[in-house]
Image (cartoon, rainbow, N blue to C red; front, side):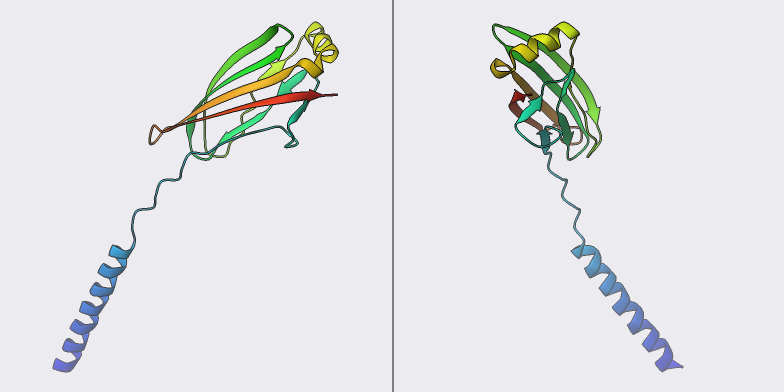
Length: 140
């Protein structure tokens, strides 16, 4: 009987020591770093001339995003600012829906035009900000 009780106590002490060492080995997971992606649908550096002119943006973690977009052409520019909150990995498509006259102008001057975007993303958890700027040419 004494031997059974002693064996049980040794097993409990050993199990407690193993549990304590494994709990100490488990460190809190590091927070993922904020990364911002900006690209076209096909991943190239050119955007098709179309009525909808847009790019794809996303964050690696939950963030607040501000996207400033512009179509810059001969002495003129269309500008707009988008503000939104995004969950990790969700796509956001900032861009323009051109009027028929705007589309005709872009078709006539696509070689001299650029689509510019500046994205500022702020991590909701840490407050860290990341800025990315891109300029895309147009193709027909």
